Length: 176
Image (cartoon, rainbow, N blue to C red):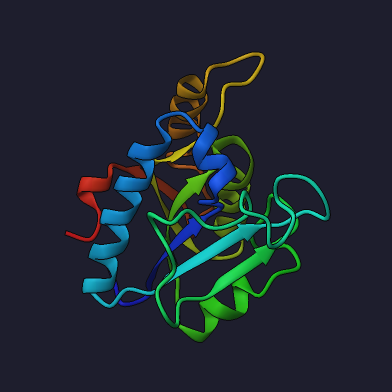
C-alpha cells in the first residue's frame, strides 16, 4: 500500500453490527485491519450514518460507533445522511488534506453504503480496495446477507474507469 492510502470504515454502528451477518466476526476483522493500518501510519477515517429519526438518530445508543472498533484520537468521524459517503460531507476534503488517492473500504451495509461509496470513489478519481470479508449486511426479502456479500464482491471487483478501479481482497492481504 502506498503512502496515499487510507482506511475508510463505513457505518460500523451498533444497530447494524447487532443485526448484520456475522457482525461480531466483522468487528474483529475490522479491528485487526485498523490496528495494522495505524501501526503503518495509514490514516483511518470513519463515516457514520445519521437520520432525523429512528435507529440512526444522532446521539442514540444504536447510532454510536461499535465499541469494538472505536475511532482513536485525531481520527475523523464524518457524518452522512445518504448512502454516498461523499454526498454533502467533508470526506473529499479529509482525503485531499491527507493526499489520499487509494481507499481501503470496510463496513456496512454492503448493498447500500459500501456499494455506493465504492463506485463514487472510483468515479471521483480514487482507486479502491474493497475488503471482501470486512463488509456485511442484513438478509433481504430476496437474498440472504451471505448472497448479497458474495454478489457485490463479484460485481465490484474490477469495476472502474480507464484510470481507477475497485479490487476485492481478503483482510489478510491488506496492510501486511
